[in-house]
Image (cartoon, rainbow, N blue to C red):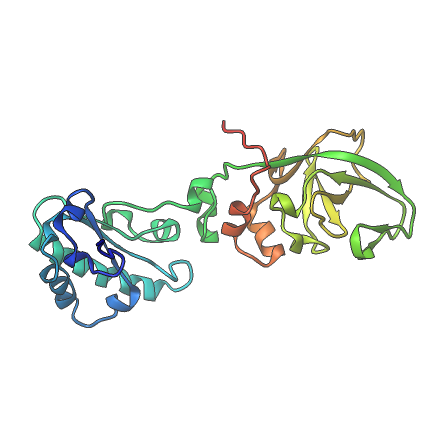
Length: 265
């Protein structure tokens, strides 16, 4: 007969389970709103015979980039719990709660560890702190086709863009299968070609997208195009793409597909 470890509380499992893996405690925002935090921390350790094995506790900040007052209150309550736990547990008990937004907006030294996420890309979840960071990721593709299109030509699926005059259109080897948002179709998105901003025209397709390169001189098939990043004095930042696509910066950077080659420098 085997024991169902998923169904049994941690404090009811054999002690050998806890010996091989130190216990981490996660406090929910709902728990932190309880008036008596001292009873919460006391209950936690009274119920567990392996309390001395606990090494760290954490919670999650749901609105750290939206509601500073709520977040500040959450941090105060969490700190009270941690102080109570440290008074009962010998040794160096660790606590962590601040993620990217919290690390920028609040004092990182309040706790022992920070959980840096999107700021590792040099992208700030709070616009007012972006000047302190430098984006480290550039997303590039190449031109696969260039054609001069007469006035009245429809571009891409659905004929959602019709050239208002003669235009030079370049096809890029990237699409929504690579993670470039389909929602950027006909929303004023731009890419960088030889340091110039070029408008995305028509719908983004699975593997291709089209841009207006009428003002770019000496363009050649195979030229690099920056989808996100800097080229000369121009930049297409992650926040710009996210805003135009109606999404968040986290989705932009995490949806870049596996077939996009990574180069680490």
